[in-house]
Amino acid sequence: MNPAKKKKSDALVVPLFCVLALGWAAMVFFFSEKLAAAEEERDRLVEQEKEKSVELEKLRREAARLREYTDRLLKDPEFVEREARERIGVGGEGEIVIRAEGH
Image (cartoon, rainbow, N blue to C red; front, top):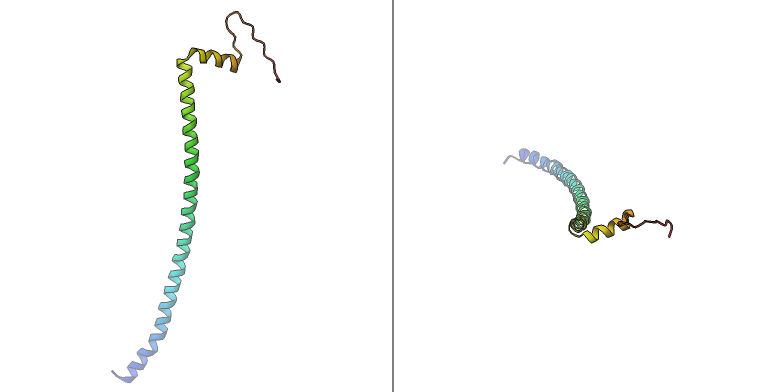
């Protein structure tokens, strides 16, 4: 190889290497920022999912309680009578209901 050409190509190696190194560093920085943002979003969504799961479980328990209450209202006349007396002050035939407020 011609020494002048070799000297020229050697002079290009260092700047080319610097450009490639800077490009690589910029890429690493860019993707590390994107990765950090994605991890934060994932953590937020995981926490939100946990909160929604707790809320869903509460709603399921409440639905089961209401189903049980409804079943008792439909099938147990004594329960209906007791609820009517306690909740809305209904009396039986011939009874007079007196409500005292402020126990």
